[in-house]
Length: 378
Image (cartoon, rainbow, N blue to C red; front, side, top):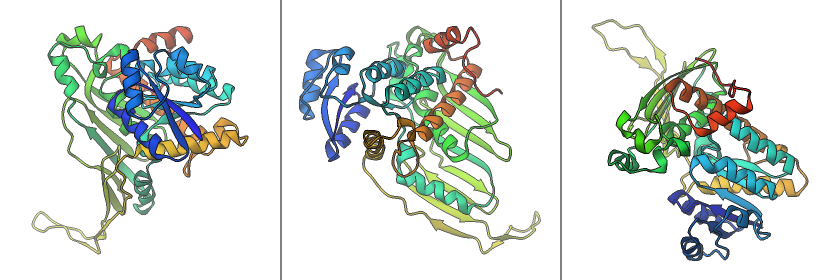
């Protein structure tokens, strides 16, 4: 049994508590909130027994084995380090940290302390995403891919009204790339590895919003990632809706699937044998066919990342080194760590090109003697 506390009272934290309560191998202990009254009511309503009002109190609680960190992005690293120092395993909501430098500090601390540190990146633990990944082997040589995720955020209306919100705030390491684009970046890294070059176009919120966003921050963007034999284009937005599906184009077939963060459907379109055509004739491919993928359905896919987190903790309890612990069927803790770090390196470079700067970037530059963290170059 793993006793889990949570930090944060957002909807995503509530969803994670839901899967804790549904898992026979985990127990929900309580939630940390700055308000004692809110911590108590939030915890009690969900069956917890220990509301927390300070990070020190949570980290020092002997009845807590692990912590889910669902606070604003800019707080992830600091809170994870405090929990790790107290011997707690941590699963940190995406993005794992503000930048690659912060993430490395957390992973290194976890390894030294002998505890698991894992990013709560839903698709990487979802059997539906893995079914799409397996289908790529049927496409022939992959040449192009495009991943889409864009949905209009009601928090953008708050910004337009001149009110501060954590979702668009440089001090909280947020914005479209960090909150929604990460769902495109990490699956790309998982499917194809780190790109050789990154070029991006960033849509910044209007200058008059910077009084509440605390600096230039992105509302949308596109990223072109170049590999030796393919290109991958990522599209993300929190100020518009992107209604296009994702696709992976191979020389023999094309995979299409809907919902990069939580695939709901998928199909493979095989091209067949293609003949030559002219301006007067429609190209015909004999033998072309479409095959639908059977994707597992789940109402709350956070159950998969929780199951993998619990599996890794159990492996550590049985004597495995944290990095070597199997986090479910598809990878070790070290594998997911490497995906997180490679993804943040790409995101660091995208933000550099777009002029989006977080407080953690200044800390990284100071720690690296002014050079900053390494990242792919355009």
